[in-house]
Amino acid sequence: MVNRVMFLAADAGPSPILPKPAEIIVGLVAFSILFVLLRTKAVPKFEQAYKERTDAIQGGLERAEIAQRDAAAALQMYNTQLADARGEAAKLREEARAEGSVILEQMRTTAQEEATRITTAARASIEAERQQAFNSLLNEVGTIATQLASKIVGEALDDQVRQSRVVDRFLEDIEKAK
Image 1 (tube, rainbow, N blue to C red):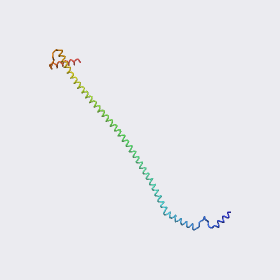
Image 2: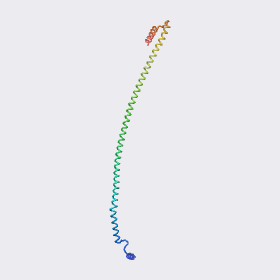
Image 3: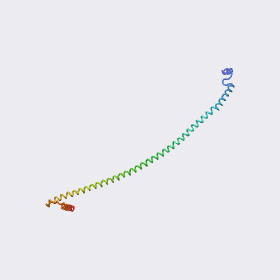
Image 4: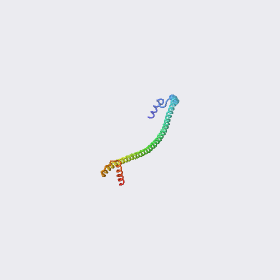
């Protein structure tokens, strides 16, 4: 059976696997033309697009690195400013506390001085009222003493000079008795 298959293949003519020499030449010429066209026209455009894309990516990476460095520097500057602001705020709080203490001490001193002034004025007023009461009491005592003396002596002590002497003597006796 093997002989028979071979025989049929030999009768069929040229081999379907192997192309004719004219087809090989036409294929090589077409391939060469296509190769030259692609090599001169398409490949440079692809290479240019590839280069532009590579440059764009590389530039984007560089810009991203620069932006990242700028952001890090801005963050560092922000942190420094924040620390300075916190320090300044603490300093202002301490100054306000010190100033508040001074104001509080001034208010205490002022209140103490006012209390002392009011106390002194009250004492002076009390002393004046006491003196006035004492003088009023002396007049009353003098009048009563004159009336008593008039009743005891049996004569009227209407004379002002005589009344004055009697009252003075009576008061001197009271003073000595103390």
